[in-house]
Length: 441
Image (cartoon, rainbow, N blue to C red; front, side, top):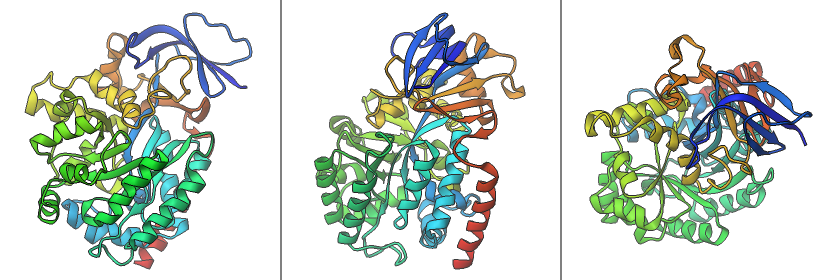
């Protein structure tokens, strides 16, 4: 089994005890972290000199739409429901297997180059095999699922019957869940209340519990959306999901901005997780989720970029900085500290996905999903990281600080080069795929 030895790094462990270790070695043996401490001996290992650099867990993005990466810049300056109906849904319906594959490849490349090692993805309704094929080839850790949309109000190009939606998801689950030694997993992805009938949501709740897989959906993202849910269901998003049995430890809810007071307690009681997407919420004008309040209630919270056309990047450094800053005018400058934000981007995201026993911190026995970061860039110099590396990462860091990204002990990105994809090909093929998609529109 291949070994890698990171020498003399500043290690941001993200565990409960040590947090920051200066001048520390980390030994990776195969897919797992084998040792952590000073002057480790591993004669056969590849040695990476990391003096003056930061080694930390890879970012865990808990809400992504790889199917939308091709749409970057094509849906700006619109509120959520108009953004979906006028731009996103027509473009998603125009995807074919080739365009969806290159959309996923483009998003994966961007994330690997900026330190992300694990994602929770929601694909579109059709051709989800293409997303899984791209994920399998890339080496990225992922949970993904086909978007489920069976409500009569959904556009014809994306609307399925309840039976078609369930059967399609079950076929994908049988083929992909647990592939690559568990690196790839399937999760049911009912899009949101307004796109799904109650029979579909109830069946998803039963099947997810039976199979032990995730449910990934949107909730309380936009005020108008929340009002429409009230009109249809007689309750808010969270209360409605609770009533039909959709909440629980394997349920991850994107956004959760417009929550009623009792719904914070419901999320905590059901141990459901929330994923916070600050840049998407700001760009769509949706609002600001009360993350400090969620954390006070004991809700598991992760961070995500959402899709490229509502952000417009998939950069977790930007998400961390925004997540920290937008709470301060509302709750005070100390209300959401850098360490809390980094927690959400790493171990907190892993906890939100129920993967914290395997990833999210640098501890012997855990999987080696890591990133190596250098602060020797103009925007992150002088090295505040020497005394406060967490502040440096959250407030100064950016994608070009990332020198290396590793998943399961395999280096997938290093110094501008990818091990599993060709960036020039991704540029060329994604551009051509977008042009054909727009012609189909």
